[in-house]
Length: 572
Image 1 (tube, rainbow, N blue to C red):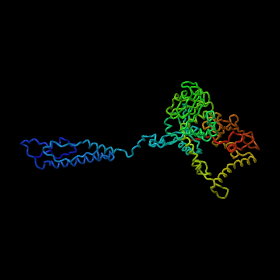
Image 2 (cartoon, rainbow, N blue to C red):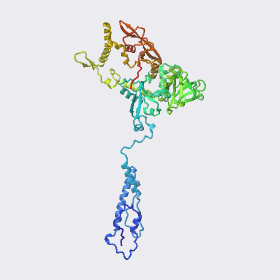
Image 3 (cartoon, rainbow, N blue to C red):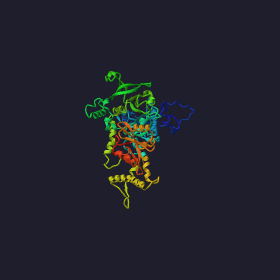
Image 4 (cartoon, helix red, strand yellow):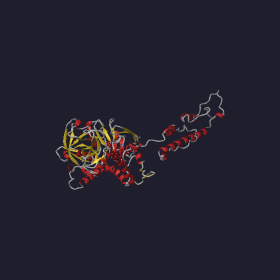
């Protein structure tokens, strides 16, 4: 009868080996005559053994089918193998169809992979980033925050941790908040390259992290005011001279129409004029007639000809940025002081790839650089210009300028009665502030009549109170004053006050008008024992420099323009 195989058989441990199955169904060789017959209790029930194996095989195939269903997102039913149950074999059958243990291993590996997979997977990068805006790209959102260090004019720095999609305007707003500055929408980030001697103001919509990735290790960001950032939208006539815009004489609004053509991507505006171009690898410059178009900057090989066969491309606009050269004319042997250059975005510290240019005057340089920005960014610049304008229109007529949190927490108080009261009316609060500001001046005049006051008396403040103002810069040289005015944008009314180098008791007012920098000396004069200050040889006298600045902010007087924008250096 039966075949004796031992105490117990584990089918899964032997991986359904075909030889083991064959062992059960082949007839056994005859036992020797001296061996006793096996007892019936030790015989294996073949029918029960096959039934147990069928149930194990069905559980294996059901697990395999469920796994395929998960991997194919519901389409796994089409891939499921239909396996009929194993029936007890007849004696004529040689062997059974064996199973495939590799499926068991695949299920186990899949279960281990699910068990070891982290709970939060990284975001899948967007395969079409060009369809998304840079700030809204999911790739940028998945990037970790970046560390950016920003420097001020006095050499102090501040380290910021910003997200990858933070724009230059947002970083400026953050620095204004942290430094408790007056937010007049004139602050900007400056990309500064000391080795190359270049710098430019970042556009408000540019991503700071992307710009930092293209900078060299010695480059840095500066936090500085730039009043001329959008001045060409307010006064386009000052930025586009007639000789550089051919059709500006056709009508009075021709320049405004020309400005609209810059913003319209379907139009083809053009700036033309002479520029000096530095020859590669040499210190010589060549004067060429240039054409700035939406497709790039061209120069004519034959005089002022605009024929296509005479035009050669000098640089494109898409992958380049325009910089101001700050090293002076001696380093590059430039023919004038009005240098600028076009730097490809991929270039970090290679001077050979720079396109060095030089204009004949400041107005021409400003025109070329402004037109470059308009042609490259177009309507995006106008949208950035409108953001603070819309914010101003939403403010109430009596609302004060946006200041820091510490200043906004202050309230106006009236202590004229027995008890103090809060002044709720903004008009009354403003008049009280003006009256309070004039009180110490009146007190100073009364004390001068009675006698000489002590050094600690408020009357001595008239000679030092101006040092607390943002527009006063102390003992700086004339060249340094020029540099600060140029850096913060040569707009009408940009001014600063400084100590005079020739007269220790006098001061100098440095003022910008029509992109020209002028200096006016403020001389002290004594009257009734009191020191006064005058800008027009004593015709108009002021008790202190603050009073003088406030007067010329409201009245032009002998100056070419009113004092509008203080040249400020903030400490971070």
